[in-house]
Image 1 (tube, rainbow, N blue to C red):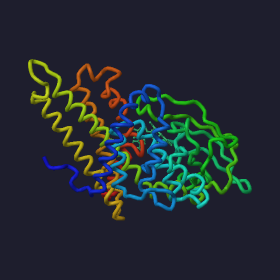
Image 2: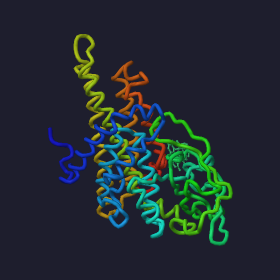
Image 3: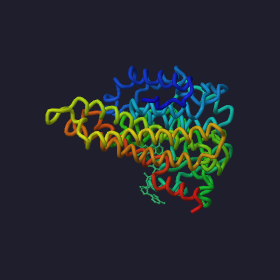
Image 4: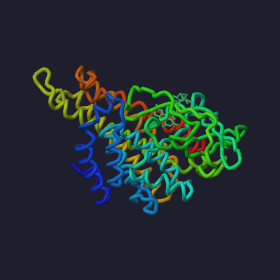
Length: 382
Ligand SMILES: Cc1cc2nc3c(=O)[nH]c(=O)nc-3n(C[C@H](O)[C@H](O)[C@H](O)COP(=O)(O)OP(=O)(O)OC[C@H]3O[C@@H](n4cnc5c(N)ncnc54)[C@H](O)[C@@H]3O)c2cc1C
């Protein structure tokens, strides 16, 4: 069989090999425990920082390890292969909080927050969603009113990953409510800032190795130097430049789908019924063949989007297609994996049951499937 990843460079193959070893040694043994305890492994996070993985794709001037979007896609796939929940916590820290700081933060904010964050010494979060603002970002109601050399934040945020453990959050707040989307700005808020508190923790169906909570801002004074990017433009700027999130979501879906495929291959070889392995029945063989095809098609779309980004080419359509296809086939592949596992896959302790709980979120976050279809249709001139 030809090597499916033959087009990766030697350095990317080495990155992939090293990550597979790390996932097998450091992530696989703790995945189930973190899922049951609903706990993000901070020691692993620190280790990934020390090894330079959190800084992948970030410039060396801010303590990053350099590297391309394709390198980053390889990283995301391997982390999600080990644990979609752990991968999600790392993603929010790296691709949302750190990426926003790197793109738009002042030199001082980068020195104080980004450099230690990439070393794994500080954990970040991204606080956009609210009770009334999900797909419709223009509905953000958290207000940031200018007062001298500070902004006063008031409002609340919902569904915020890493909130219970984060040292800082990049908060999306409205500096010009009448302008809706065009009046949103980004602020860095530290965990111990007066007027800010992490309210109730939230328990989830899946990706439970990442932690989530609600946030409250009660006349929270944030220095104007903590504005990340331009006033009234911060969120829009972030939206245009952070397409990385869609590529990462696609890569997560590929990693999770590959884990489901591997578990299924092992199971259908081993499980015998009617005197033979169930993998010898044509119905099962065809189903597993389709799963493998979909994993590879999704990975190609994902890598194509990453390579377009690396070459500085427009890649909005490619990123949306990769995200849409990979996340939807991931859900389908995981459903098939559970089907071929029969009752054993339905048991709480089965990894396939965890995959089943984990997969759906990737269709919802980073712009749901409907929003991706909208973007693709728009790119097609409709
Ligand atoms: C596990 C998890 C982690 C998260 N972590 C974070 C985080 O760290 N930070 C953060 O800010 N947020 C986070 N979120 C929230 C996330 O940002 C929202 O879930 C997302 O923005 C979608 O919003 P919503 O869930 O309110 O869904 P809604 O916007 O209410 O959408 C519900 C349904 O309506 C559909 N819909 C909405 N508008 C349209 C339309 N115009 N056309 C067609 N269909 C439409 C959607 O596709 C979806 O199927 C997280 C969510 C989850 C589940």
